[in-house]
Length: 613
Image 1 (cartoon, rainbow, N blue to C red):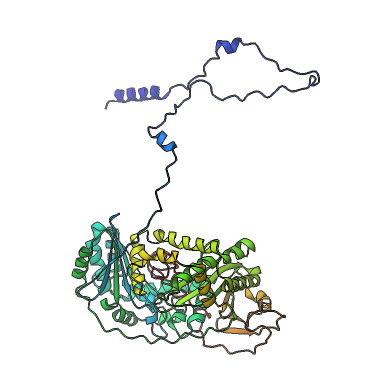
Image 2 (cartoon, helix red, strand yellow; image 1 turned 120 degrees about the vertical axis):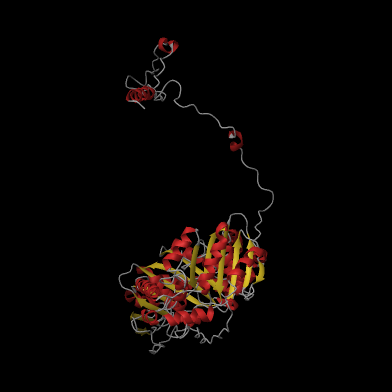
């Protein structure tokens, strides 16, 4: 292009852009010639009376700069949609069950709405398979299986996953270990190839082991500054016992994590990551024949092995209430937890208990939250959780409390628990709770990941394949008498311990005055002070009301250097994977269905995520 031509184009562009703004239209001749009107002023008003306010004027006269035009569908958009005929119905998926040549069970849920496939491999052993003195081993193994294989280094595996947009994560819970994969349909063959390599050939290279160990140790150090995680650990110790694997601190202690060797990691994987200990749940854009063929091809050399029978110590008795407090000076809130043990997921009281819990502490409008948050302003939120698993169940009421109101909050916890155990829900509360559980099911099963995880958990817990399809009808049939009966039978505040973590030294006397049992104050790791309950006033409640207890020796010795704290409802330090789960862990936590147990593999150990649809 010549210089003259370029200059000409530039000049033309400048003329095209220098248009003038529209000028106001001149006033009409009739308006201009109209005589000026004066306000009528009565004699009584006098000369100081003000004329009426002039009508507002516009800032622009003449035609608008931009004409507003109606779109062709404007009449349709202006109409209110007619109500839908009848009730919306959600049909939850029911999986097809198959078996691979190596004996692994496979559940397949065909969901063809989007070209995505999710695979959840559940192994029926988790923290319960950890040897004594090796707390944190199950989570350590889960973290390592995604850190490279014999033919792929950590970076090579990560690069392949990234190239094909594949998500891979692993985690361990109390009773299960899980490896989860999410992939586009077009990448399914390569995804199954990588999954098979991870399951059969993890490398456990010393450099990777040391790196993950440091991450886990850093996570354990961070946990000491989190009152919620310390309260979770302490609650687990009281519920399951110091000698039980579930009563150990979530993720272990610095001493146990340091003691875990490469041989320990290999041995745990070889013992429990076996096809005859596995349940593979697949959900997404795939048929049963297609995925079974792919898995058979890639996992054909994955062999069964004899599974050891676990011998776990019994749970300790929980038969009297006391307050177990860990002094954490400098914090502005206290964590207050009240918990006890429940029943297995297959128990016939499962659904009535879940409905009752919605009223007590499951909803924002639940009794606990409306009391502690809305009425008294002691907390941003207090809720209760029911977790039902294959071999055990737990109840926890938890919340962060303004430190200056710790004792008063404990009193309100106990008041609400005792009142609910005695009376149960009202009819309106029952209706809202049932509606909440039923309407929550579509959201709980919204993604392929959620479906694969939920169905794996359901079948592992011994519930039927059509559990999600039939559970709304069974929830609808629950009556107020059903919910009141389970509340009376299972909610036992006068037997359940109270855990408090925060600046409790200044609240110890006020906690004693509640007459709920002795107050055990942990001043520092390994140091326990037992304060006897003072003589209670007439009419005081509690198993120790009106008595003075003698000092009792501490049962069990916490590991050196670790504060007495069991079970955590948070993610296991250093776990692989994405979000929460609650805490969670490796893969993100997904809401659970009524009574089906936690959907995601909680990397934390205790207490597990609540059971909810």
